[in-house]
Length: 210
Image (cartoon, rainbow, N blue to C red; front, side, top):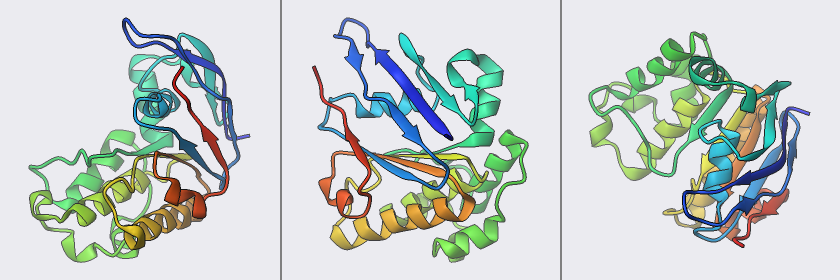
């Protein structure tokens, strides 16, 4: 089992404790985490990414307990093994597209995927030297996906990747994530309130607010 999350609980300051369903995922498998706004699904994604520490339970990725790592060790492990597609692309505005991806290799100390090939597969190689400020919303999202894939992670986490897309582009983006995850043998977790995605990823769990 590549990814296991067991007995997870978390509480934001002054709020009720959230209890999450267990997650078990093998390499190459995809999982949807469904839930309404405010249900805690993004909190669960952040716990799986090691960005939040649960008050109970554990996350194990490729035999390593994320909950046992801290500081620089956790950052290094995340950089090498986890790719995150945020709901809003967090790109470095001062750098062109290609250098945003090169940063991933630099910080993870890992060769990862060939950047030119990756940009070509995602249909944005012609934007390699462009400022990220000139990208359309769809192009920026594809760059964000490329950045998450650049280090050939074992786990890809995508937060609401289709929230602002029409039906055709929703299908395209999910297909893109599935194909790329399968290519590198990564587990894929998509957090969304968009039930259209269930047409393409049948394996899902639901997070419900208490």
